[in-house]
Image (cartoon, rainbow, N blue to C red; front, side):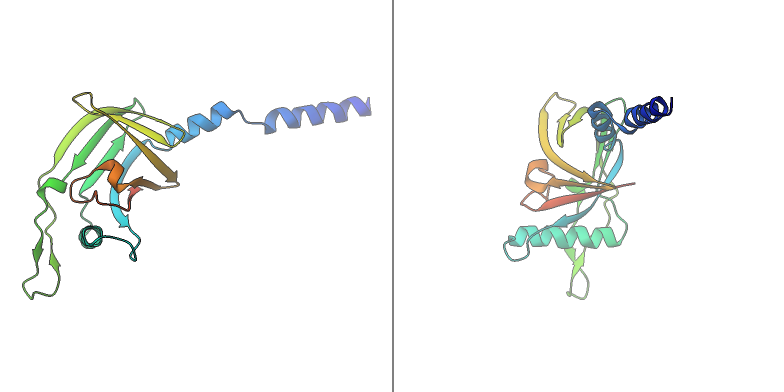
Length: 166
């Protein structure tokens, strides 16, 4: 009887401690659901082009003002809404001539599409049925996307675009 009780406890422990791969895939797919704001551009300073460095400076300047120039919202129903102010950037030199003066854009383009996300691959289908496939890395509240793959206006020379989940 004691042997049967121990065997039953071992089997119960094994049954409740195992998770299925299906559960892991669902968790991964759900990890992208939510609103993501572009907050940084990471580049390799020693190999980056002047355009990459300039784009990083602009994004750092805007992020310091809490200005979001791109927000992507992935919904559980596989729809996606993109709000993009990149085409409305006005890049100036400050009045003292010592740095950037980039006002936060007040205009934005909004598009609605659909997406699929599995195994770190994001497939986005826009309003005109153009499909874009990107490699995406999500770790907690941080999503990384290749700047050249995303092809976001003014920020597509190179490096990694960093999005923060809000």
